[in-house]
Length: 219
Image 1 (cartoon, one colour):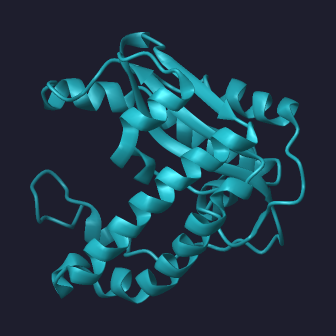
Image 2 (image 1 turned 60 degrees about the horizontal axis):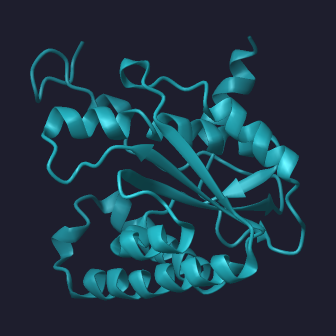
C-alpha cells in the first residue's frame, strides 16, 4: 500500500463548493463505483441497513436545493445573532468567514450540481438513547466518508451538508422515503476544477488527544 498516496488522499479531501464544475456531467457509472466502495465501510453489528439516494432529476434537485437554501438562511441568521463564544477557538473564528462565504455560494447554486446524493440508514434516532444513536449514525457516516474519498480520487468534488435535515420530512416526501428511514449527509456532487488541494489548518493533535484521563495531553 502506498502510504504517502493514502495519507495525501485523507489529508486533502475537503468540502468543495466554489470549485464544483456544474457544466460537466457526472457519469452514473462513476457514482456507482464510488457507492460500491462506500458500502465496504464498517457498520454496527454488520446490519448493513444503508441506502443511497441519487437525485439527478432537475425538478427534484431544484426542490431539494430550495429546502437547503431556506434552511441555510435560517442557519446564517442564527450565526449572526450568536455571541462570540459560538466559535470557541481562534482558528475556527479565523476560518469561518471564508467557509460561510463559500457555503452561501453553494446555497445559491446547489441545484446546478449534476447529482445530489443522500446517505440514509434504516431506523430512527428520535427516541433512541445515546448508544443506539451512536450505532445508527456510526453505521452510515463511515460509508458517506468513504464515498467522499472515492469521489476525490476520481476527480469529483463534494460538500458534506446536513442543512436539508431542518425539513427532513419534506425531503423524504419528495423522494418517497419510508418513514423508518433516517436521512444523514447530503452531497452535491460534481467534478472539481483545479488540482491544488492542500491540508486544512487544524489544531495540533497533541492539544486534542487525552491519554488515560481527560486533560492529560502527554503519552
